[in-house]
Length: 205
Image (tube, rainbow, N blue to C red):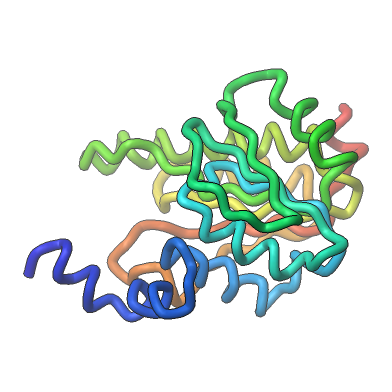
């Protein structure tokens, strides 16, 4: 069966089409938030690597009309036309990005989301290392933009560098959980880490 045929038969791909989400990834965020409620009404949320916009759609609903959502990606995305969602074209390696995020959204954040992915080479060790590098960039942004007690939800690939990255997250969050939402394909090495209870003081040291 070709990749396209598999995708057409994929339950969450079909569900996204029916329910109007831009990607099946929307259900990963919905499922994680249903379990741990880290995105709440009135929250300020940034989504790093937001294309094509599925997570922005979910976050927009979860924060409600009095919340704010900012999407960041290297390339422009098709406008969502949601009143509580903004978009910023930017690179997570840009040192000026955290200040731009805070300025655009109007203050420190409640939640930083990262579904950043590298260009997949097919060499597992290389892809794992690149993914952890992106997750580390997202963590650096989270440390500079989150308010005390905030949450960080980030995609990683399982592998030898994961343990070290989790240890680094534990320095900055009171609680770190490893999640595999049902919408993640079973054969994928993809996992998500949820850091809850950001320790702002530890990130200043």
